[in-house]
Amino acid sequence: MKTLERGFGLVEVMLALVLGLVMSLALAQIFVSSKSSYASQTSSASLQEDARFVLSKMVQEVQLVGMFGCLGKVEDASVSNGFSRAFEDPITWDTNSHTLTLATAGAGEGGGWSTWVIHSDCISSATAYSNGRAPRLAVGETAMPIHRQVYRFNKARNELSLNGQPLVSNVRAFSVLFGVAGSINDRSIARYAATAEPSLIRSVRLTLTLFDPADRAQEQTVDVVAAIRNRLG
Image (cartoon, rainbow, N blue to C red):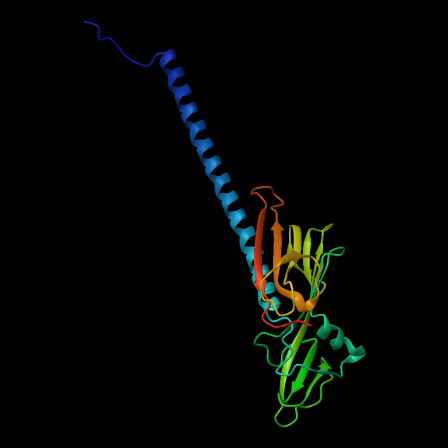
């Protein structure tokens, strides 16, 4: 008596191959989609982190703008009277060149780099000297470093620089608006403007937009407002 031999037919083999191919394509699509989503989220988070890092530094400096020691008047002994100009106008925004210029106190930097240094006894004398040209401190005097920080947005290069050195790349836009009071004695914000009388500036709004050159994520725009702690002008 013959034993019947059973096996897979051609149709069954083809069907199994088709099903296997479909499953492989589905798994590959899931993998590609997950990888693309991960890359997009990572890129987006990186853009936000870069923007917040730069703006947090700028906010700290803006808050210290106009802080020139414990006396309201400072004698200028700096080269070419550069400090006097910064004293009169410690924060400016040039809309044409996209340049933000700050004269700000050094945060926790005792003898470090500075543009100027103020020697003061906080009683009757305060004198500003250029960096490296200050005499020794007199008895009872303290030294306060003052920085001149220049942030410039180069639209052609999509770059934000600090004092001529690249700070962050892939910048789509950078803008500054001043929160302006209605009068010298008013602390509330009446309007926002690109230019303002220093004595009327109460806050500074900084807006930075970054993009991913590989187009893996949408542009990220971060907007912060820094209050002016010191009366300007």
